[in-house]
Length: 86
Image 1 (tube, helix red, strand yellow):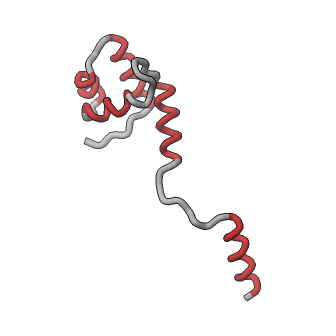
Image 2 (cartoon, helix red, strand yellow):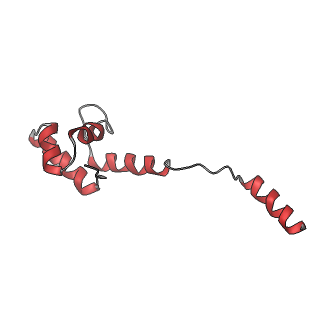
């Protein structure tokens, strides 16, 4: 069951937590694994879950995904200079 949570999902999680739902009940409502809810709750300080703060954390972590480039600006200029010389 793979699912990327949206701000809407996170708002549902926040609301259900305030009402007193368990993590298992929330996972069934949102349609994700209980471990996804557990991980999601760790995005915010213990005992307090905020959908907007969790969304910001998610977006920040998404920017760090993927392969990092080895082509720095200096290296790019060096390669460009060699190509132009030829």
